[in-house]
Length: 317
Image 1: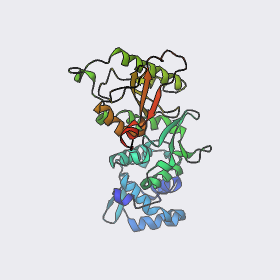
Image 2: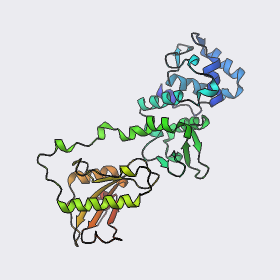
Image 3: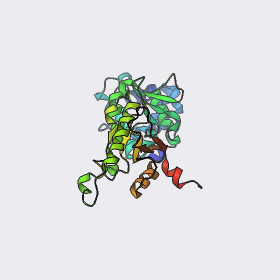
Image 4: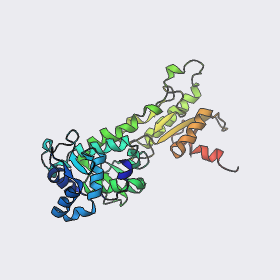
């Protein structure tokens, strides 16, 4: 079913899908695929370019069942009697909820929305996706979402697609929330590691608190300011001390900071766990080096290194 879906580059538009779901298919009635296709194209000429893709899409969503050469509505998943009309249907969330769930089940959801291409525009107060970072195999789904007005072109930035503000709450619950809840990557609480581990010394703690304040000052207008957090004492195996944001448009943590403090001469210990985390997070991992002798200076800025694993382990020096 998924393989068949990805063969198509056109899944129709609002008018064509609405026609199929609310007029061409009747509950409790089977129709031969060939007759169904002829009926659709004779009543809506434009659908001739997309009818095969529409059938594949509705089959993928389980809105229809295909049995041999016949097609019929699956009323458990889609019953037209439950909705007002084809005009209103795509202004509600049912279709998109089913689509995103099916993409998730097929392992394709993150090809469409992921931590690299999804941001929150604080000026528009809308989520947006960087269109050019959507995986190529889902361009047809991207185009469908544009035609259904779930995605809207950003008039100020050509490559940005805004999530329609009417769907902001739905999008946050069904897509964004999942970025914050990934059980496989949850950190191990300190209670499980307390034995055998030494507490951070006071000097290290001062450096972490300094960087936390530094990040809060840098992002003082961030809408999720309270999620700039020092986690070093809560999750000892995280591989970093502070989770923050790169800029005001980032709504998911995308700056993970390991703090190393020193006095006058730079020297620090970088643990194997921290090195592995830096290797894994790449450009999202930052090393902040804090000179404790300068921390009280109002204009002091720590030394900041992005992607330190690459700088240290992947060069010829």
